[in-house]
Amino acid sequence: QITLKESGPSLVEPTQTLTLTCSFSGFSLSSSGVGVGWIRQPPGKALEWLALLYWNTDKRYSPSLNGRLTITEDTSKNRVMLTMTKVDPVDTATYYCAHRLDIGADDVFDVWGPGTMVTVS
Amino acid sequence: EIVMTQSPAILSVSPGESATLSCRASQNVYRFLAWYQQKPGQAPRLLIYAASTRAADIPARFSGSGSGTEFTLTITRLQSEDFAVYYCQQYSGWPPKITFGPGTKVDI
Image (cartoon, rainbow over all chains, first blue to last red; front, side, top):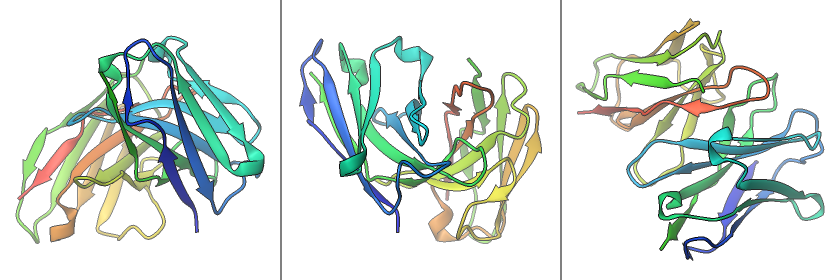
């Protein structure tokens, strides 16, 4: 059974750097086709994709975040981290990590963590 | 960036009826289109990917269709647990520039 869970600070001051951790189980990031993505959702608003880390260490980012994101992995501990620099109140959102569907080449997310709410203030 | 739009914003239906939700892409996304369901306080749930393939354990009353720029999610025989917000997501191109639509709320 695949599970993911996000963790990190609930409150961050503007201009600071935010680091979130996704702890997962039930799959290996070294297995072909596997990936972990980060998606966020401001209160009452739509989903926004942020980053995606693939099994082959390829990393992709949303261009709208203008280079503020870094996604890294700690394979030995089954964790994926997302770092966001220069946070602003508009970054206030629930942040989700999710498992990339590993059948075929579809960049969609079939298992999600419960999310962690981050307030920038 | 590919912009996704969804209509209607709110769809009022009764249990047992059918619902048809639309998603439009600002440019051709072929069949690289997924649908998610989100209930209040919960993470999204993948329903459909590749425009029409149901994800694991998704009931047959959910079906997707379309290609190019126009897509539809149809829910037949709506049940009480189907009242939620539905998002479409495109994932066309490489490198990926994944974008979501604004959502359609299916309401009683």
